[in-house]
Amino acid sequence: MIKALVFDLDDTLYDNTNYWLGAFKDISFYLEKEYGVEKNETYSILFKIFNENKSMYSHLFDDLITELNITPPSKDNLIKEMVKIFHSHKPELELYDDTLLTLNELKKEYKLGIITNGKYPTQMNKIRLLGLEKYFEVIICPEYINRKPKSQSYFEMLGKLGFSNKEVIYVGDNPLVDFIGAKEAGLITIRIMKGPFKDMVVSSELDAEFKINNLKEIIILLKSV
Image (cartoon, rainbow, N blue to C red; front, side, top):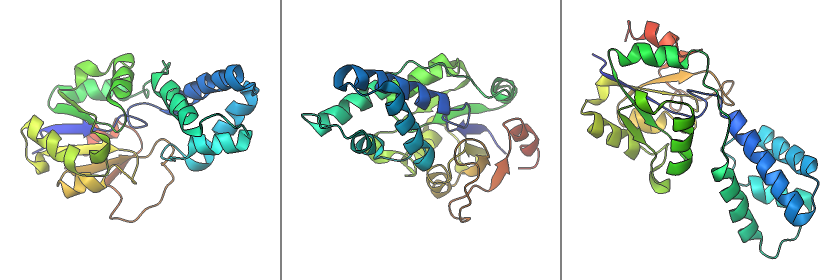
């Protein structure tokens, strides 16, 4: 019997693209001020790199510096500054249309949790801006060495919820990180086909057991799990 559902945050409960695009604007203004680079050019390059590589790409700012052909006194310090600007961005975020409807319905019968990669202050800021904090009993932002796809955060969630693995469902969007650790921990997995990874085809080892097109379908699926 299912007793709890655990969700990823970015691109599972809301469209995370707006966060990235807003942060790109902040970085573009900064580089124009400090290095005289036209902000629209910077933004276009950032968008192109992001669109080609998606959110998991770790060399975004390295590639940006190369394409802009700028020579800062310290490349590492400039990258650190851009990362700082990215994480301090104050976004305007919007939930998917059916997020609150689904969470309100689920909360009547189940405990709810979140496991989200990313810096704790950044992710909690998003959760508060989206008005989600009140829906979740447990929120875990694992340390870098224990982030998804590693399984530690899923086992931690089970311990904090107090349920066995077969009593908990995990819902995410990214098959490269969301379901490997969840399966290792024995959770039931659901993949929502939204966000930048919606068209990604992966092996059954990486994919979830169930797939949905929107969050409302969870309520229907629960009747058969």
